[in-house]
Image: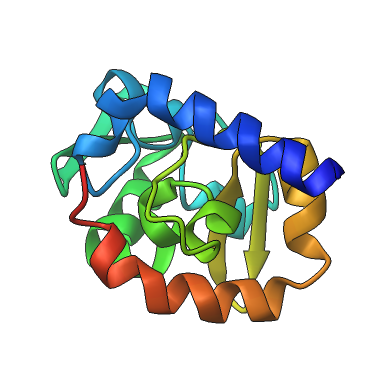
Length: 149
């Protein structure tokens, strides 16, 4: 029952947020990860706000960084640091419903050197219970899903 309710709420919010689905990268206001430094999740194991003065354009989104070393690391290998599924909800990408759901920064997780986000903390709780399986499903779904509006 809880899972069905969460999925229903997720679907409704996704429809409301449809404008955000037009890009491969979830970038509200044009900023990927809502302006957080993608490299910091790996190096510092926490969310660190980036600076507008340290920005880089990649995949039609602006990526912000806390320091120039992080920016240079990202430029050298953006696929290593960019969140999976364009920063859209990892759990949502796995469910096969064909939608891209927005995410909250505090739901981040690094699994096997890859960065994931989820819709909200409750969805993240569901996702972490079977991450390996959800990642396999989302990896299968993402090539088709990333190009959807």
